[in-house]
Length: 419
Image 1 (cartoon, rainbow, N blue to C red):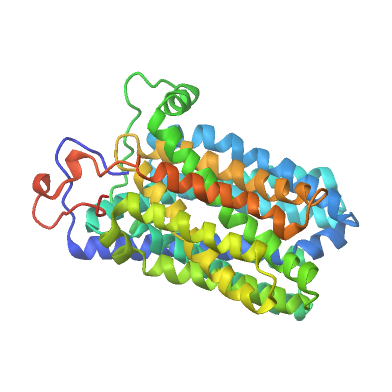
Image 2: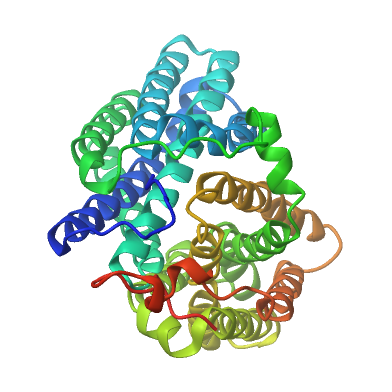
């Protein structure tokens, strides 16, 4: 993380360009590893001889690692620096992935659960660190980059799913695939971590924040952090529920094949990636608040159309509109959370905890509603999240005064257009 001494730090264009490349590599690699895990879940289940319910329980238990880490991550990053945190998180989830491989070989469900805790903790630490470092690169570049970094994650996810499908078709075991993926991804991330981190020196913990619990407690008492967290919760709920329910709802509601349902979900993903790659001019024209409000409005319209229109041919367009709206919310609030370099790691960690909770709870809550109503109607609950984004968007701040162009040395402009 960059040390803030009162004046913005000046970086050469070549150094900033390397920072952009290095950060993008971190996001793409993260997406590819997660795709390796997701693509082999059926093989993991069958290798252990467990039911879908048991596998879901293990995954939920494993999420404890992620939730625990977000309470410590900000303090850790401030103590050791973002680069070292990326390294530590990457090594942790690599070792834990090897334990997952061992659990499959031994047929041990408890070992899988413990390994999952390690994987999610490692992913959470490196994820928060790379977002915090991405915000440093964004500020130094003087332009909006966070949506592009998050698009890199989606691209890595798509590529990883293709690789997973291929190696599964070739008969490669899940154990070998997961370990090789973790080792390769970690090797790539470690090779580019020096590029991604503009300043390797840790920020140091602000006086008065104390240890990890003190740091976390300080952030969760900040009303602005809670505001950003609420928007992140809503945005993650809208985004992550799509991956779980779009294809299934297509099959259930319109009696189409699974492949058609998957295609509709892929259109959602393509819409998200496209908007994230083109996010800078959108945010530059609208500003943060209006961009968030537009995103919430688009996802609300897409969700209502997807839930209520009776025609199968209309669902692809509804899914695309849903994806367009879901694309920018999390990157925008992550960027906003990192406005103050002194607190960026802790604030990003706090906001990320809201995203994590949404990812764990909301898709399952939508599923629970299907005991009472049709799945597509249950998805209307997500429209409430989209409306929440619209309602709260106007309270998201402009960039802080130290980041204004008038305060910056030559070549260092604001990180993003403010609303």
